Image 1: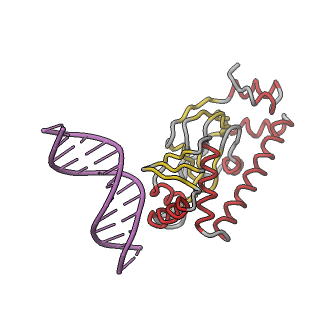
Image 2: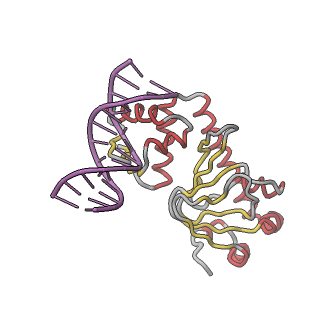
Image 3: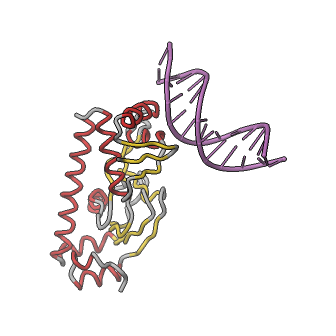
Length: 206
DNA sequence: ACATTAATTGTGT
DNA sequence: ACACAATTAATGT
């Protein structure tokens, strides 16, 4: 059997066996597009390693980050799409290199009936995603951009497991759907406050 | 090693 | 938001 170590604690034997049998292990590299808008959903991913950024596209041209998926997460929206056989409403881009298991839709539904641990896993993930969404909504609706930026940076530190972020002001602006100049200015003030340090294409959280 | 270009960041209006 | 200056990295000769 493959190395699903940590999954052993979550799922029972029989289910692990089925995952092993029917799931496809897929490796991805940073910046790979995992799922694009309008893509037909083929299965539900379980992240084994690395992180994935889930984005939402706006009516005109803006894109914005919704949340990150990390180890042992699955994507609630994908589930939702599966059930209704809909096309993807979001774009998923690899944040880091990593691995995931893709489980075909048919099994996802079957396992809901067969395995208690699977149901729990799915429900817990729904819960987690919803909470993150609320956070994100709060940060858009109520927080000033500087707080939102900090929130973003902290999330990024968490999913990359590094205090040193390799990213340009432009990329950040795209993720937050704002302009580069604004980000540059905010980062400058954060730097002056000693919250971060900057080098070219690098931001270090203190 | 040097010049040229492109990419990234800083600042003023 | 826009324009431009300043700085740094990448590439070719």
